Image (tube, rainbow over all chains, first blue to last red):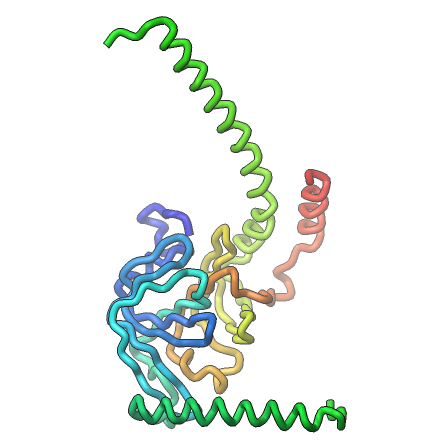
Length: 128
Length: 129
């Protein structure tokens, strides 16, 4: 991601081609941030304006506004350019309120925990 | 301002020292870079081909390799996620930048590997180290 000459900027791996565009930033903890890329550097540190987090639980989703975010590069997994012409999410997905998504998140977490617990209890059966 | 003979000597000595240091460091840097550069140049040759990049979070993305840099950051075009149902948020992503540090595998096209060339380069590197 070194500095590229203006004419080959779109061929280089620099994020310059994504400046001022609406992007999806995937973080290492699985979070999905969206917003406009305003600045970046060689570590993929990034400044995202009008950022919001998109929380997805099953077929429910919610956009939680965050404001201006500076993301430390090491946490970035992927930066994707969004196709404005395509639907951002599958049609069956429903937007819900922040409170509702938090509740769904909690329920999902508990379910996973329970699943883990059950697996542990049944481990002596040697299912796999 | 006049420069005395002694001052001039000191300055030129300092320059000589700096220059030496720089050259030594330059040499070290080059050999370190060469090691990474094998795969960097290898991936550069693959630009334009269809690859599948599997990330450490199990997300696998297929797309045309657009560019690679020295950190092995990868840019893909016309991407599609292999397991779309599991990652619905990736539906409208067409082009993406992937940080090199999160890549687990890059699955190459079958004819994209010149094994002899890679063998050669690897041996040369092993001798050099």
